[in-house]
Length: 393
Image (tube, rainbow, N blue to C red; front, side):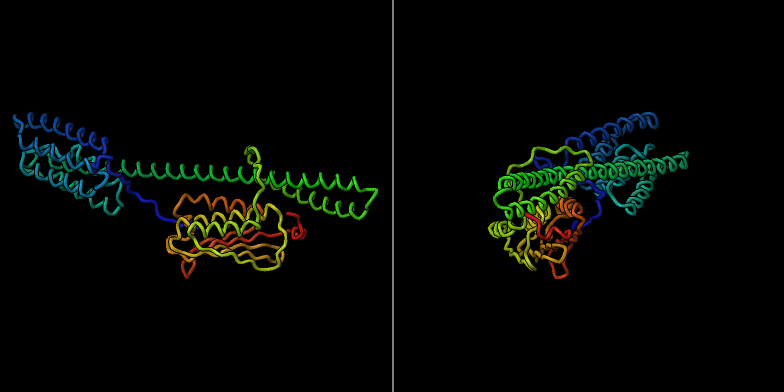
């Protein structure tokens, strides 16, 4: 159901609330790089030529200004920094080449762009940094330092990118695990309510049988049959409840309202129509009572699918098809929208997690994905034991 998309490498920075395309952090980085380069330029020029060119100071400061928008426009920022740096190298007898501004600009490109562009940018940065107005007594040393600085920036950025992706993957895994745990707690609460219903029924049937034991044996017989079926069903539901809770999740207070089932499908289909998504219910096969947990699972699948169709399918129609099969019950929800179908790939994807948890609990299968003719499809099939077709619900 989820549409997989490659994780973007670039990080996008929204404009500030006052409309500026940079943040306070960007301004501090630009100012710090500019001050650091200006100090280094001043000291170097004073030692080498005995004076500090004003035009060189101006170009040094101007080269740091593009860093304000480096995270929004990393390529243009590096291009501007290289152009101003090249102009400085060609107009002033500079001996300092790979400065802080250039390092920040190249790092940002390596941090946000794809490897082919990063390699081109690194080569261009090294070439521009070694172009100078006059020959330097040790040109090889300058070339080596420029290449080394460029490589260091790229390697640092690559390490940061790798760490960032691993951190994001870990956070997403924690969110998914939290969603699974929350869904299991919800299922446990619902099953708790179902089991309580069966135990209450057993108590009432036992009391009725005892009251009619001497007066109406036939009534007692029917009560005992019902009691046996409810006991078998309660035992099965209790085992499922224990399976859900085996991970150690605590069961919260059970809800007081009855849990919904297949009998409530007409209601949620009607609610979907009133909410703006035309939908219809198609029931096929011989209708029969379903185990409460199975009916609840069918209801939750339809509820989740219709909810997401209303959010993401756009102008669409939906169809809910419930099929009673021999030994199983199948439910399918389809839409003909063009806005992302049931839309689990557009949101958090936790609706799909909940569906799968419920279906796996009953040993069923779940299929989801786009349809060839357009729209989206959610299909689940839940097997039934031989005696579950006549279970009380």
